[in-house]
Image (cartoon, rainbow over the protein chains, first blue to last red):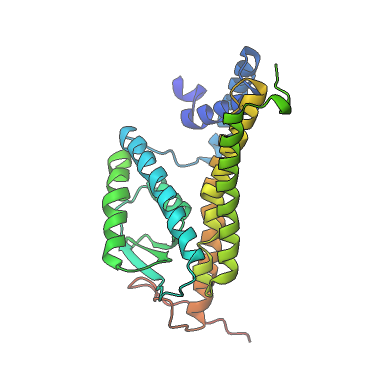
Length: 162
Length: 127
């Protein structure tokens, strides 16, 4: 019964929140937004989108906090690189990192984190070998980046999704 | 109820200006770096300055300004931040992977080969 009315609860909730943010909160918009959120989720059902299985929310909140700080730091770091007039020898390069994550949503979150952090860009993922390749703008130590991704982000994503 | 621009409180004006400056400077530095850096893969990092705190700073400034002038919390800018963050990787990966594919088919040594046990991309042969 629950399943028939609310096939994708997270999607519906997201749509409702978006509707309320755009139109301002009022009882009328709450009702209208709920109806639209339910109908839209129903319309999604034939497409059978993969349902994220989130085991626990705490690691995600923790991750959000870490990532927010990292993004600020790397914004400053990359801005300094642009302004650096000394023409110091800066090496950029590719780093291949073994990832144990298999869950698609978790990988998507990881891709968003790596890409929205200036200075690193997700370039390739090889699902059979479990390898991903990122490009790093200021590459000093490959192992440092592998450790960073594995210990800082992947561990928390594992706890949240797998 | 709304506040006329002349009555805008000083503390809010300073905050708005600060965040606007942060956001626009970062976006500008990103654009500057896009010009100054040499290789494609280096350049791909620069627009993320604009899409992370570049946009972020301007959006925070907008939230403060309109929340103060309209005397109610205005937070729909969060949606812009979410959508920009979620869509950036899509275009960035498309560009990076297209470049990577081209470099590999051309036999460019500066890019690493594909993961082990995968067939190399065949060079395109026109009949």
